[in-house]
Amino acid sequence: MRCVAEGNGLRSAARILGLSKDSVNHIILKVGEHCQQVLSNLLETLQLEQCQLDELFAFVQKKSSFPARPEPEARPNMDLASDRPNL
Image (tube, rainbow, N blue to C red; front, top):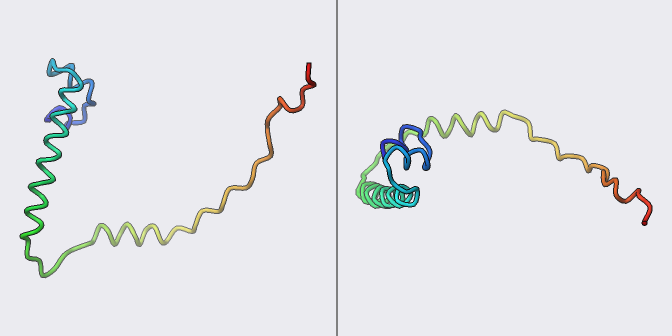
């Protein structure tokens, strides 16, 4: 897990560890499932009175300050094959 967490890809982690990429992928999936179980149990028993959403607010505020992108204009058909005579 440390190799992947440090930014190595799946294949490079497999080469470094001497494992198959399928084995590394299986380990990553198992760790992900375990993390999901632990976090869901922690969040269910968490008693919050206040919650900070600074980053989320900043993202939404920043996104809303940009004007909407204009719809792309229809491009003319660039197919040159239609101009060729049939042989």
